[in-house]
Amino acid sequence: MPGTVLVINPNTNKQTTAMMTDLIRPALSAAGLTVEGITVAHGPRMLADPAALAAAGPHVLHAVRHRLTTAAGVGAGGEVVAVIVAAIGDPGRELLDGVLDVPVVGIGQASILAAARGGQRFGMATSTPLLADSLVDLVAQYGHSDTFIGVRLTTSDPLVLAADPERQFLELADAVRACVADGAESVIIAGGPLAATARRLAELDLAPIIEPLPSAAALVIAAVDNSPGGTSRGG
Image 1 (cartoon, rainbow, N blue to C red):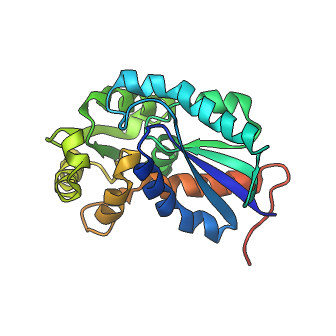
Image 2: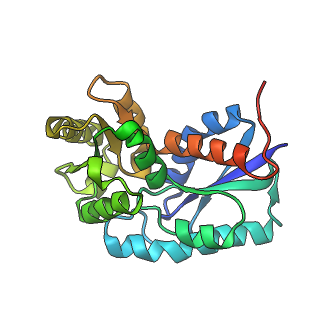
């Protein structure tokens, strides 16, 4: 049975939406799922502080509800079978989970669960210093503070790094090295817009890199296959 996974970008940058959907599409397509990216209509182009993160939740809820209402829940890839909230703070995930009858996965949720698997110590590297406390709280929300060694940050302004992918890559690599020095056995690259850089960092021999988008894809595939009416795709 075909199905569509909605990837909702909680910031208003449509280029980021396209980048994230392109990166997550291969894993979901291999499981027989279609990917559809959605961008919220209102809010900042980057969620860089707690106020913006909190404000994004209702926009995420509205955007997904609008898509389901206007398309009657069905697109070219079939019925919507899951939703991925593609920002590391998972804004709107709980709101959606409370009103939808399909799995709702946050990339923060998925990456934390993947990083903490087996009780390993993990850290986060990110470019948004004002969200560091929010990330610590998110780890606690999912019950893995005991093996979390903390957040390491880039040094430049996040908007500067967003405009300079190479500088972003180099500074995040330094943040990963700092996490490893702190004792991390794996490192989450914490940010949806950092997904392309996370892919590059995973190719280096710095540490096991937890990429939020592939982590979310894996969690969605498992959830869809285990949901009522789910089928084993592939083969």
